[in-house]
Amino acid sequence: MSVGLLALFDDVAGLVKVAAASLDDVAGQASRAGLKAAGAVIDDAAVTPNYVHGFSADRELPIVGRIALGSIKNKLLFLLPAALLLSLFAPWLITPLLMIGGAYLCYEGAEKIFHALAPHSAEKHEEIIEPIAVDPKTLEEQKIAGAIKTDFILSAEIMTIALAAIEAPNIWEQALILAVVAVGITIAVYGVVALIVKGDDAGLWLAKHGRTGFGRSFGRGIVKAMPSVMRILAIVGTAAMTWVGGSIVAHGLYEFGVDAPEHIIEAAAHWAEHTFPAIAAFAGWLATAAVDFVFGILLGALLIPVASHIIAPALRAIKRLLPKRA
Image 1 (cartoon, rainbow, N blue to C red):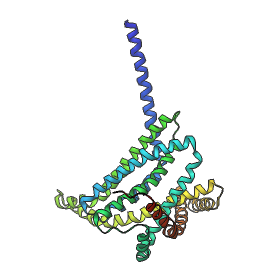
Image 2 (image 1 turned 90 degrees about the vertical axis):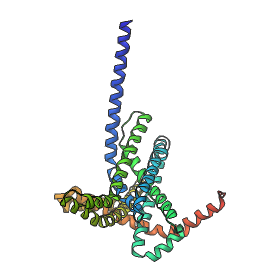
Image 3 (image 1 turned 30 degrees about the horizontal axis):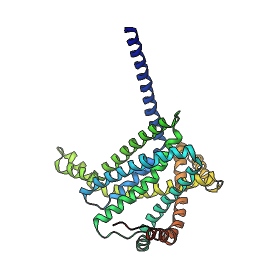
């Protein structure tokens, strides 16, 4: 009996070791997959603070929290199962769907630039696409919905890149690794976003309650710097949204045999690497991002009238056909 009990303990210990090794492998692959998607993660963190700009301080964290919750739902309830099912049964659909999402990001980026350059014309375009909110509550709901839609596209890219980096023997381990990536990245992104949007409040507290002169001066510096930081983030977020979208569409076109945009991007990267050999990697990345940005802007500019005159009327017609909710 004692020998059998010892054998059972030995088997349990062996299972625990296997489980621990599996968990280590999951954590390792999740961290590697997250690093692969780092570019899209940075874009997500840069884009999101723009959606809370202009709201009162007491609404900033609740808005970030709702967007973060929407992001988790995007990743775990929709994108994770969709990515696994598509990779199993219809991998050929992944590229077209990503291209549609990339085109949407190009449109969003171009529309924001259009708004900055010609605000009156842009407001007319926005009224065609979606009625302008007249009260703070409706405006907040529109901003949150817009942020979650944009997050969906960026999250789709993150999950797809992560899935491609995973080397798991079965679908269950793939799902677990993707879930770890989804939760970890969402916490990281929206934690950083919360710190950014509350930076001015932290600076104000330091300016009032700092124990040293340096601490109070540092707090005042933060308060003065935050408007500029938010403007820079708005520019970076718009640029990031546009170059990510342009990159997705250009890579998708290459897979379908339209290789001119991809060749131009590669040529620009090679030129930058050879022109600036001391910073070859950074120069190549910067040239790639710049060409992706230009391609994204051109595509987005083409999509603005398409959205106004084709997509928006079609969506309104579909809404009229649907039964109205009480």
